Length: 401
Ligand code: PLP
Image (tube, rainbow, N blue to C red):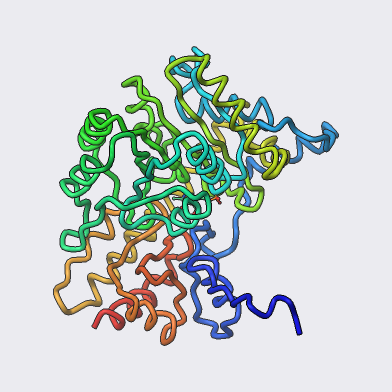
């Protein structure tokens, strides 16, 4: 008898488990709208041309595979902070940002969780309701208590701004407020610039610490700068804050696990101490980060020619998703005879659409129509093609009624 007899079977992951179920389905009509990964119009994975070019350069240079320092590749850390805050941002120029290369967005969030647990014991993290499913896992495993603030209003299929403000106001002073920098996952609903100002007001009033998760820079609007404006608005107020970054989506580097944690402090001295402690936390967890993705980012973001090509490719990707969004809306509006207003699909931004389908309806999408999606009603438009919009519209209408 095994000594692992008492270990129960873990449930499949609500997002990655969807891909496993999709693989097992033999129906040719099947569609994977679960995971947020960009696909071409032919629904194939896409490696960006700038990534291929950077990798060719790296191969030509014959670079070695020595360990990186605990904080990661210096050239990467420099360009990633500049991409986020802007190269001319005083916090960057005055050395107030502690940047450490992370194991993509997830690993960077997890490192921040470890830091909060160690240096802010008892402090709570506030998550939007709903949020990316893994946020709860990350803070649970970090032993950081969390609760939720209102965000999505099903009645308006929009932002519950008053609820959000009032919940942030009611949180214990000095809480960490987790904010999606842009392209909120799963709802696709972002605050307006005026609303961001008010969110910053109440966070400052309550002495909270903003904690941005930026996993889609460039994917909301197609512009890297515009998508960083929420983070820049808070830094311009002189606030101390955390930002976890990911290059999974905007450079298509999913499996390279490349991202960063940035902590903005009010002095360079504090930033240096924070960085030293982040390194101390990283060392026994994973020792030092992988080099390949860091070099790709350093080469693309640090080279003016490749950087401009990247922006063009990103506009192309963002543009394809916008076209699919429009086509899905058109198909639903044309086919649906119930008079339902589908315009929320056009108002949502980024990779996803939050359809409003409940769990049973989402099950119908999968069981009857072979459309794989998360059970909260989220569909990834990045995994949809123009050719499949009509089919998806039929599935959605059938599942709603
Ligand atoms: N944060 C949000 C909101 C996300 O949607 C994702 C990916 O789906 C991530 C973080 C982290 O992804 P990764 O660990 O691949 O960078």
